[in-house]
Length: 169
Ligand code: COA
Image (cartoon, rainbow, N blue to C red):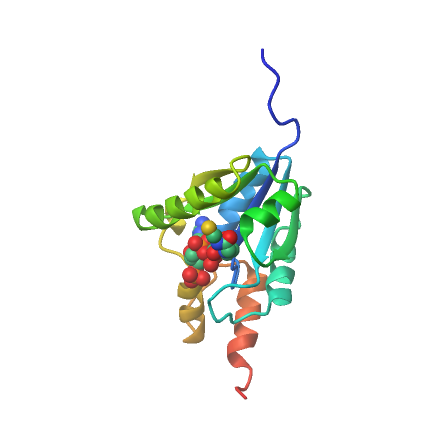
């Protein structure tokens, strides 16, 4: 039998995580079963207007991933592929929810491969239970006091409640 190419695998799970949902956790937990180390990293230079600060998003991620000892939380700015290389990662893991995700993700994966062909992008099909889910959908439901218990962990639901019940400035 030939020797595995990588004896120690480090995977990066990148995203805005504004906030983390059960859909993200589905991908993170499966990645944690496959790879030796999983770095879940929050993009700080997103063009999106976030509800949660980077530190808040990292804290929520740390709370809800604490059961997996091989998962660590971080943040990055700039190009993902440069960050992945700097962290010694072998792979980038992304979840695919629907056909509509495919075209964008293919473009990203191809661009990243062009920039650094040593780092592979792995796609996992998101559990169909969460295929409609996004952080924006969760925020929209929470903003109008809709039920989110099936969409996000308790710590995230509580943080959303605090955000939307805080007096606006
Ligand atoms: N379950 C539920 N929801 C999911 C999901 C899953 N498995 N996977 C993604 N989503 C949701 C996210 O919550 C997000 O929702 P939102 O748009 O309401 O915030 C949406 O789907 C899009 O997710 P994704 O495509 O992962 O975007 P993102 O904003 O979370 O992260 C980066 C994108 C940060 C990974 C990407 O822009 C990046 O790498 N940026 C760095 C710059 C760079 O290197 N660019 C590439 C140059 S070639």
